[in-house]
Image (tube, rainbow, N blue to C red; front, side, top):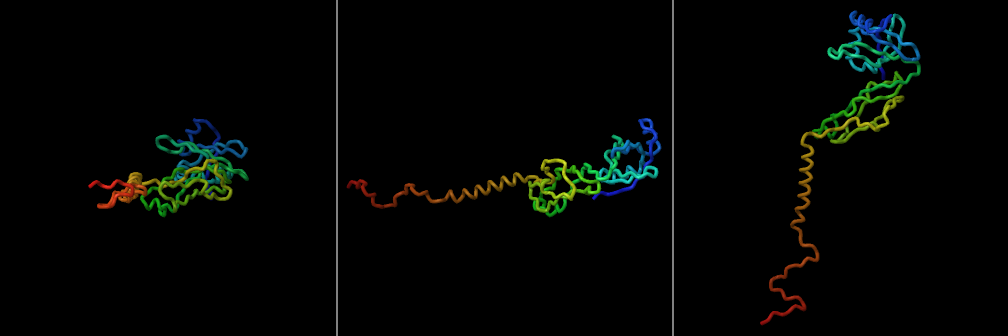
Length: 236
């Protein structure tokens, strides 16, 4: 289920690009808290702490208790902006989580037992076709990951969304039966199948080539045999 983390923030008295640049020069990242039918609250958070939380993973599915100068805000990150060159955080958005809230989040797909798949044992490779799935759920019910069991996947077989049991209260957003995981054949697999099919065809045709003539075919008369009834007798 969802992880809850704590973070301190400071209220920003001013908005605008100039104020945001001043925050960054001071080693902080500007942001905003919005939602739950309340006015937006401009804030700033520590640059190093935010960067560590973003790159440690699962940032966008983690619930935060933001301490804004002594006032607690229960929020979830909805977006963050990175510098296109240095990939350092430039801005972050948090959404308030009111009581009874149901939110839309993208949950990563995790494959388990892939090494047991018959297709993998025959040289195939597990391919994750869908890396994350968007779901609707209460904030406290956000799954850490959606697990897909690959233990019985053959080569070219696929596990779909309809085959996965989601936790209670979690529903997929898409109505499409998404392909989640498949086992890709090894190099040369198609040629091996063609060669095997050709060999099987040749093996099936071999006995037919040496078979006796079909019923109704004219058999050659045996040497010295008497002529058939009604046939002309040889002249002396």
